[in-house]
Length: 279
Ligand code: C2E
Ligand code: CA
Ligand code: CA
Ligand code: CA
Image 1 (tube, protein in one colour):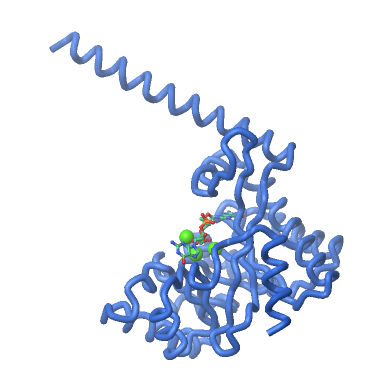
Image 2 (cartoon, rainbow, N blue to C red):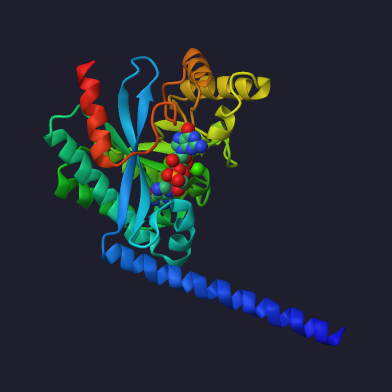
């Protein structure tokens, strides 16, 4: 039994060392990725339920690794957060969104809002407001065309401070969206204290629409309450026409999902906007 115990602990220690080593390796690869500009943003269209037109684009990061190819954010965002690298990556994301938005306008494409994701760590940083202010100034991009997405957990930390931060961002003219809405612990009563513009209804409520009675009722209730509080509702993860039809019928304002398009590279997004001008 004694030797078995020793083996187990040896195995356990090895396991820890290995994962710590992997994390360190990933961290240094991420640093290099930043320096060598290996990150790219793909854009997913956001569609107005009434006009059917593309009114926005959510920017989603990918890592173009020379060896591994395109790497999805769920493989590196958590490590970027725990190492603090998320601040530099996040800054790059905001810069890139505003540069890209300015380029599309310059090319004469129809104006679309650009949404970007901010992790809770990033939102808590004192200098986020100043960073966004500077980027808007240097790129000339209109604040009203920029939308910041944060999750409920980012908002649920220190209440007073959060309200103040949101008000400052609002004053700058940036739109504010709450991501994955319904999966966190916030209530709409609590959220009315925040100057938000959009609730992004989480994909998990959309998946089984319209047949799932409870989910259908939840979606209806969220749309009604959100509108009462003056927020727009965008449904995430729309994959089927039946979901789209139901969401349109209950008064959802916009939707996003594979039914319309997956997130695509900027050149493809520009073509999509271009073709939407024709019809
Ligand atoms: P999210 O912000 O909730 O983004 C939505 C995710 O759902 C995206 O995955 C998108 O590709 C995917 N999606 C969109 N429509 C559909 C659909 O109809 N069906 C299905 N099955 N999936 C759909 P992605 O791009 O892999 O991003 C995953 C998460 O990584 C994002 O979730 C976000 O939390 C995080 N993320 C992405 N980009 C950034 C970034 O620039 N900064 C930070 N902090 N986080 C980011
Ligand atoms: Ca998002
Ligand atoms: Ca989401
Ligand atoms: Ca999510």
